[in-house]
Image 1 (cartoon, rainbow, N blue to C red):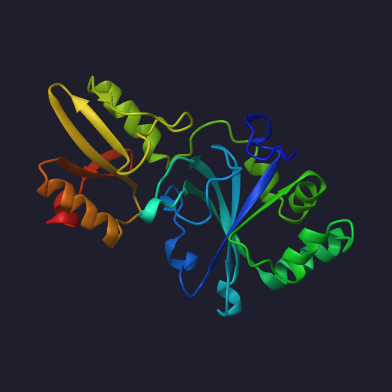
Image 2 (cartoon, helix red, strand yellow):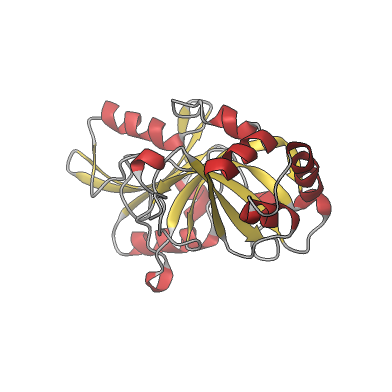
Amino acid sequence: MSDIGTKANVKNGVWIFQANIASYNYWKEFQEGKTENWEKPPKKNKAPGQIILFRQTGAGPPEKVGIYGIGELLDTNYEGVKSTKGVRVRYLKRFRNFVTISTLREKANKVGINENKNRQLYRFIYGGIPRTDIWFGGVDYELLQKILPELKEFEKRDAPTENDAESHFRKWVERKGGQILGAKDSSTGKTVGWPDFAVRIGEKIIVYEIKSENDKVTESQREMLRMLRKLGADVKIMFYVDGKWDDRTGIWLD
């Protein structure tokens, strides 16, 4: 029986989330600190805190197809459209030296990947796997750590990143004497689902969408937030910039 997704195994492997450049462009979308809902891959076998490598696939230019960086799973209770079960992720570190497919293979050649013993990893590096999500644990994970030393360094993290807007937001709510409503994800404290937070401050309930400095509000998010406002909800879009909160509701919704 696989132990993928158990709490004990949170840091004993890595997910690789793949997106075809024709439908999703990491070159534009990968921003450190940004959180996103992914309807694919599904939440099966996943747990908050697990590491993710984000890989661009498809018929794109060589300098844009490859591994962009590292992130983590935040929430496995996200439900997308048509009852699709998805996950919520955070982009944490964009590689300064983008790992192209040729670079990945050059590094793998130096480490040595056995086609028979490491069949899935070999196929992933030298052939390609069409699935949206792939889990590598055990020896395969150790080999990936040698190929991509950033993985080893990433495991040493024990505190929120500077761009972790959600952590700063929770502290901000606490200072105001507010209360975050609804069921919460154990790793982030965020209200399960979307938008990010529903908060009671005094007698007032406010819906917050939280963004980091270089993040953006998607058109689908804007549409939903406008709908909530029409239904009578008090909606705020807050950006965490240079250690302060900037209310950009008017910029994005008006």
